[in-house]
Length: 137
Image 1: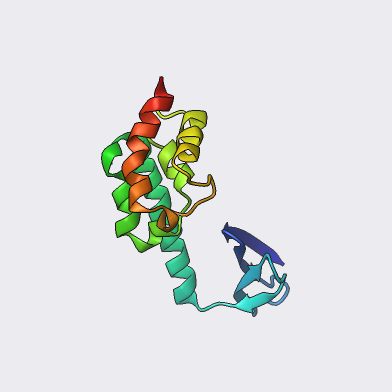
Image 2: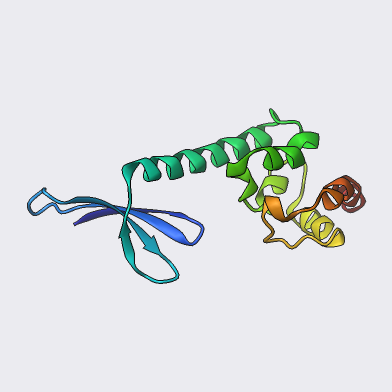
């Protein structure tokens, strides 16, 4: 059996085909929590791949500097695919930001390192630039 596995958070998409007879092709979901397999609709698999690609493209754009660092907090609020992404990787992708400084700044404003974009309040976002500046020195 040939298998490829790709993960999103606590799930993994398993694409497999039975090479013995070639008749079985499945796209299934492997849940990390229950360790059960569930057949998936191809449209859902495409949607998951699109979200993953969009997130990767956004991180690359931040790293390349094509997205203004000042607008990074607002892009997660405006985009449902990014709202469920963790804050830390997006902030660490800003050119010139060091990982430790970013983590300390998040701690200063009361945001956990594992927080999702949608979990950060407007007040925390507004105080983030000053916290990042304090730790950039």
